[in-house]
Image 1 (cartoon, rainbow, N blue to C red):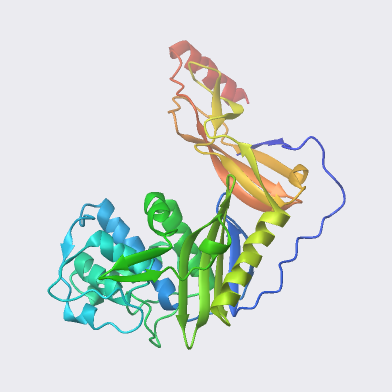
Image 2: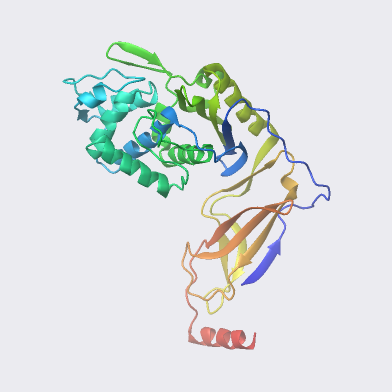
Length: 373
């Protein structure tokens, strides 16, 4: 591998800046990060296992949305309510046996009202039984990299073997927002839902306190305390916070907002390159063209402490020799981005255009040059 180095900033500052310190938070564990760049900002006990309570419903929703995308369900599909779903304890949508309910009504009951009965009905509609659905939940958790999570039911009802962590729940919420943006925007900012002549409000108080907050889910049991996963979009940035085991409904809202405000106030999201924009022209051997334009498939955004964009540097590592033919979209290099010498990530560069093979004489000439080189 041949290394090509260049600095993104025009100058660098010698002094080392102290990392912004997060606020004191009343919670058992928590995590906050910038979804725009994918960078976690801070966390406290992110791998401590806790009872996720109704935050479990994010995984239930993820699988329901997957079933809708795969045409295994439809929003207008009528679902028969089983006795098991009807008898579900805890928060309820008040669905009833003998009165079919649409998938979309069940989704709103699950998301807005946190209905345990709606979750069981959806699980049965997707997998035939809640037990089979739970197996799907755990397979999906493994696929998403949720290494310290185990689900025992679709609703979050207490169970000694039902657990997760702030890190894993952050990954789950981030995946739901990323993979199902339409469903996220449609359901998670809804403040109330009426079913069976009963109106219930969304328990996420931040939907009323901060107009930039548009979801995502609350949770509470006696053992777990009061929890909240919240997301806020301000301008082009979106932050996500996970707060587990606070002391009250008011506290979980206030502490979550504290984390979100801290992230927006003390960090900047810096767009380094647009997707499809040339980062570097790389030499091509045995090609119809001597160079190929290399860039990123999507926008490259990194998050750094506020005012420290000039401390960003990048190192381009290109694959040399790069021999034609080169197809459009082919990975041709890596862009390593650092901040004050600390790695922020490696981002693949792809060919933005195809480069065909040279004629017989051109290829022969470059073969000789490479042999000499």
